Structure formats: C-alpha cells, structure tokens
Length: 140
Image 1 (cartoon, rainbow, N blue to C red):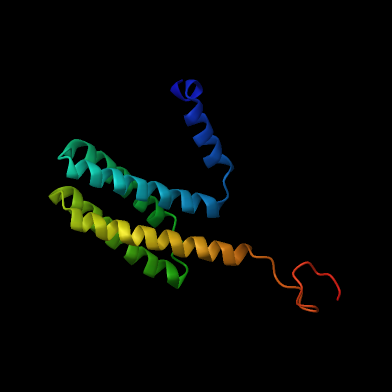
Image 2 (image 1 turned 180 degrees about the vertical axis):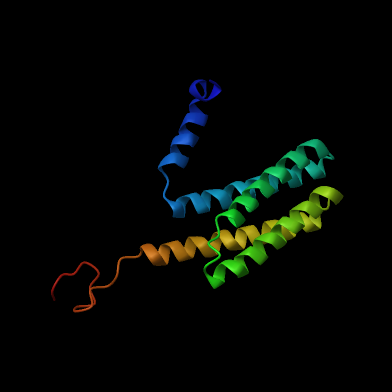
C-alpha cells in the first residue's frame, strides 16, 4: 500500500524491475556504498542503532552479490573470497563500531564498482568494422 502512495518508491521499483543485469550489479554496489557512508556518519555521531541498520543493509547487499555468483567459473571463487572479506570487515565495523574496518570495506566496494563499470563498458562497446577500421562501417 505504501508503495502505491510514494512516487519515489514507485520510480525506484520500476528502475529495478526494468534494469538489465549489468545495471542491477552497479545499483547493488551503489546501494552498498551509500549504506557504508550512512553507517560511517552514524558511527561518528555515536548513533549506533542507525549504524547497525545501515551496516546490516550493506551486508545484505554483499550477501546478495555472493549468492549471485556462478561457482562453475574460477573467477567466482576469487570473487567469493573478496566479497567474504568485505562482509568480514562490515561485521567487524558493526561489532566494534570501527571506522577502519568500515573504510576497508567501502574501499573495496568502490574499487569493485569501478572495475565492473569498466568491464560493462568494454562488453557493450560496438566492435570496429574489421574491413575498414571504421566503427560506423562506412567504406572509405
């Protein structure tokens, strides 16, 4: 019911429902980074209830990243280890209210977001026309 009354929530849900897998991946990283920033601000204000909420939401996102891995590929095993390390840092940040662990997790989330963004651009880049070297395929 609340979703129908909140235009922002409707827009957000529509964006999620219509996004391709590449866009969803970037949206997950954006959300995790946003929750890290909010958690840091809450810890700095000694608002431990809010920091717990934001860190748990960030962990939920990292757990979703882990769950989405296809372990048939070797790269997934490496990604699993890195995502698990990020999750470890988020848990330590939450238990200890430790900004250093939180900064470590946020750093890796930002790096992963950048790497995935670049990889998506490479995959989506139109191939060069091999006969002319011209992207539009026009003859010279």
